[in-house]
Image (tube, rainbow, N blue to C red; front, side, top):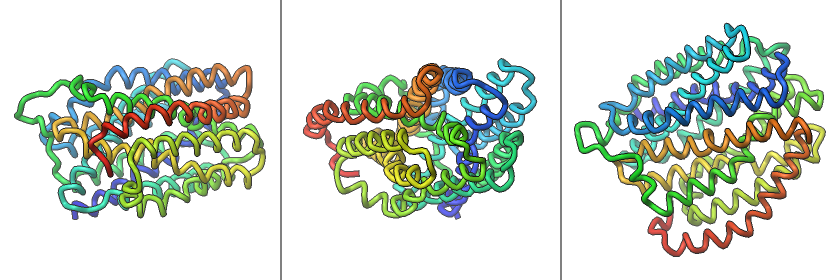
Length: 382
């Protein structure tokens, strides 16, 4: 039952994640400029980063991690319900900040619970995360079906889904915080490991481009004249390649080391951004979305497995939280805020082309860096 609850939780939680891809389009519908959309993505992330050390440390110190996850989801749902009641930009900013703080904490906490349980029970993590992708697709379809004409009820719908996910947490495995009633280990101990410092730094630099995409892609499709239903189908089909990957993900991870996977992800996304910059219709957009599976694989899934093997159990929750804050925190600030400002002058396609060229050029430097890390890394397979 505990193992099955992990599947159910990931399916429900990621329904809301799929819905959240429409948030930039929702901001566009209510008349916000690209720079203000960037502010609504980056400033709440700064707030989340301010709370990050506290929440990351709590992950490993609470008696039962699932109860902390339930609390995060309850607060997340409440934040969603406040968004449509915001009467001005600063009230909207406050509500979205609450949403960002709790969503940034919830997902790595669920990942920690799943990884610790599956490793102890000798089960695979990939199929659990696969149900997350199915939920993501379902969320995109629901928006297209229920909110095809207006996204005004997007946040309340997401809030209802988070409440449903919260009810499932009470049936999830009883994973304890490894520092509960034991010596407290400071978060700074995590960064004493040179390989972890490089891991977080490389993922941060590469995922700046991914976070720009997350913040502006649905709006870009709207700028091309596509309605919510079309955007919904493109969103669904764009993540289709994740399904077979996640089913075999634990086995695919063993093909090579984490450092080579990071290099693969950088090259694949460089090609992807260049292709999307030149595409103006649905079919080529879908074709250039296929390499998008490497974002999940190389910057989320494989690093999570690597951290589970390399980091001491007492800091496992903090390590996953820092991974989430690297990709959905620090990288989002740069990608959204700076991207939004630049887009005011260049437009979205031009910045996508620049991102693609920068990743391909940076891959040459990344190759040299990763060779040295491979030679000294003790984790050979994931």
